[in-house]
Image (cartoon, rainbow, N blue to C red; front, side):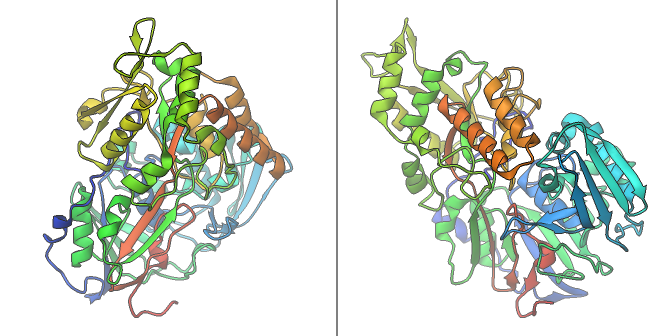
Length: 543
């Protein structure tokens, strides 16, 4: 995932600066940080930012989702190798023939970290809360689209019902945003939960949070259950996980290399070339979900024109972006979805770098080359603007490369770096610029419905401006139970989005975690979030 958005509705373009070699020398070595301290081994892990919202139901940010995964658990999990749905808080489940009703049998003996038992009423209260939060929990709310309610069949059995088929729900139930929280947490205000008043059933509990400084997770000694997708049972190996926030990616890497922290996640791929892999283990994988794109904002005059949008895709040299900006550590996008996502279909025909084709499309639409090389029509220059925070960042360097590429076909790409505060003044529906970006991770093609439909305010780019064909394909994918027909709907949605240039995918997102010699492993889950339950210090055998 790229860096988090400045606000829920603002441009995602807070890019990360490239690594300067001199940046690796400034951190003091703490030495043996994952070794046993009083009470047991401690994992010191650095994160690139503090999202200041730790409610598992609310934020869509990579960092907050990764941490929430350790505190709160879900009914089911997804195997990161096979994609199979596996037991977690539910040991058994079944869906009716049209995927409108899902019945779950809960695991016996599960408790929240305050000692309260997990019951069928807990599941109902959590799902009801997510729907009631509405726009504050817009990711979870879309996973529960058409939610009619949860029926308590007995103390350990629930039925979740929808008004129409919801084929994606079982996979959605594996995601952090549908995790289950204790009654004591559900009774607090959303702001209180966001500030860290979170009680879950996870292998860790949130012990201390100091905004902008650190977050401390404490191991639960009474945690005998575990996910069927994680190769671990019982309490976690680390007694405590100390999380610190290091916003600058150069300093983040420096802290990892010098030993000031044991691990860092997620690392900016542009910094990886300077990490000594004889001392640091890197696990870097293509993420599932939406390829990192530029998305035309359809309220803007130029972006309403299909010819301009289509020309942008053919004017873009994605291989050059992968090679020159990211040193070959990412792969050029080949569709709206990444290659690692179920339902991905190769749509290179719409994304092939073909400047001659881009020029032809523009000329046929009446855009003629002017004396300065920039095209004009009826006196108007073909000028497209993007605003972003992060001057000198990796993303700015990528935009500068795109500026050069697009100029070759007569498009003036204006770059307007700005501040986070200024970025937060606008939404994707009234921004005074032409392009934005949003990359959503999820191991299911239904992720397209969140971003490229017209259904969800604050997240759907077409909200208020529906594209009927695309909406129909996305709804068919959600409502179709048949696996083959669902794949066909996913392929149709990707084709429709790219045929008329509603997205300009650039590269497949990558998730990277690095750790030093004091750590044996920190495994990923199915959505490339680290699993602290499966993490082990060096020298400790797998339980």
